[in-house]
Amino acid sequence: MTHTDPGDGTLPLSVGQEGLWLLHSLAPDSSTYHLAGGVRMEPAPDPEILARAVDAVTERHPMLRSVYADTEHGPRRRVLPPGETGRLTVREVRGADDEELRRMVDAEVAAPFHLTGEGPFRAVLLRRAQDAVALVVTHHIATDALSQWLLWRDLLAAYAELAEGREPRLEPPATDFDHFVAAERTLLDSSRGALQADFWRAQCAGSQAAELPTDRPRPDVPASKGTSLVRRLPDALSEGIRRAAADREVSQFAVALGALQGLVNRWTGMRDFLVACPASVRRSAAREVVGYYVNPVLVRAEISRDATLGEVVDRAAERIRQATARASYPFPLVAQDAGDGGPLYRIAMTMVSTERFDGGMEAAAAGVPMRVGGLTVTYLEIPHLEGQCDVSLEVTRDARGLTIALRYDTALFERATMERLFDQYVRFLTAAVDDADRPLGRIRLTDGDDKRALLALGGHPGAAS
Image (cartoon, rainbow, N blue to C red; front, side):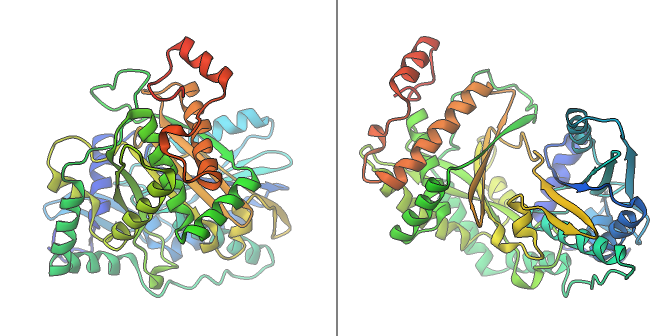
C-alpha cells in the first residue's frame, strides 16, 4: 500500500481494497464480488420519492459515489459530488411474472461495474402493476455485510420521511473510511504489525488449504461462477447449537466451524488444513460508515486420528480467538508472504448476526414484513458473492434461529454433491449437539439406503459412511 499523498484530491485504498481492485482489473466483467439485496414493495412505490431517497443515501455515504483508477502512486479512489453517480434506475415490467422478475434480478446482480467511471453502487426499481422489487447492488470494494444493512436502513427511513412530506434526516457519520486506511498504515509500520505478521507466518507454515474432492478437473483459469443452496435449520437444532455453545463456553460460530472441520476431515482424510473466516475489522466508531471492513483470517485445524467432535470444536474456538485478535493484519500481505505455493484457502466460512442490525433491520432479515411510507416491504434474500472459492458457508443468526447459505463453484461440483455435503454438515451439527464425545470417524453421515446408493454411484471417499 502506498504511503504517498499526491495532493490531487484522490484517496489511498486499504490493502484489502487494493486486492479487490486487482481482482476486478483482471476480470472486470465478473460478478464474483458483487453484493446484493432487495425488497418487495406492495403497492409499487412512487419512483420519484424512491429516487430522492436513493440520492439521500449516496449523499450520506461517499464510498457509494467513489470511482477508482490506477495512478503513478498506485490505485486511488476519488469521490464524486452527490448526484453524479448512483442514481435510481426505474424499469417498467408491468406484465412480468415472478419467474421473469427473478431472471431480471439475476441479470442486474450479474451486470458488471465500471469502477473507473460509474462507481460501485446501483439501485434499480423493477416496477409491476401491483408491486415492485427494489434492488441494491454494490461491489465488495466499497461495502461489506453490515454496510448493506446500513444502506437499506437509511434508504427505507429516507423513503418513509419523504412519503410523509419531510426531508430525510440522514446526518453524516462521525468518522469515515479514510480513518481506517490511516490506522491500517500505522499498524503496518509498527512493532505490533510485525508481531502479527510473524503469527500468520507461523499459522500457515506446514499447513495447506482444505480441499474437497471435485466432480470435475480444476480448470487452469478459475471460472469464478457459482450458485447457492440455502436452508433454514430446524428450530430445535438452532436452539441445540445455542445450548451446546453455552455449555462448552464457546461461540456458536466455533460449533459451526468445528462441525465443518470435522466433515472436511471425513471427506478428505486431511488432518492439518486451513479454512478462511472473513472477520469484521470495523471499530465501534465506524458503525455508521459504509465501507469494506472485512479481512479473511485463516483458522488452522489440527485433528488427531481419534479426535472427538467436541475436541475439534474446542480447538476451533481457541484458534478463532487467536486469529480474531490479529485480524487487523491484511490477508493480502499474509498471502504475499506465503509465496506462490498455491491458494491459502479454498473453503471459507462466516457467521453474520442480525443482532448488529438496527432500525428494524433485524426483523427484516428474518423475513418479517415492515410498514414503510404506506407500503408493505419484505426483504428478499438474493444470491451473491458466488464463486469466490470452491465452497463457502454463510451462517445467518437471527432472533428465530440459523439459516445457512452454501455457495459453491459450479465448474467443480455437481449440485447433487453439494446437497449431499449440506445434508452431512447438518448431521455433524446435530452430532455437535447430541453426541459431541463421539470420535469423528464414528459419526454416521448417511442412512443405509443412502449409503448403498452412493456406493453404486461411486461417491466421494469418506462421504458414504
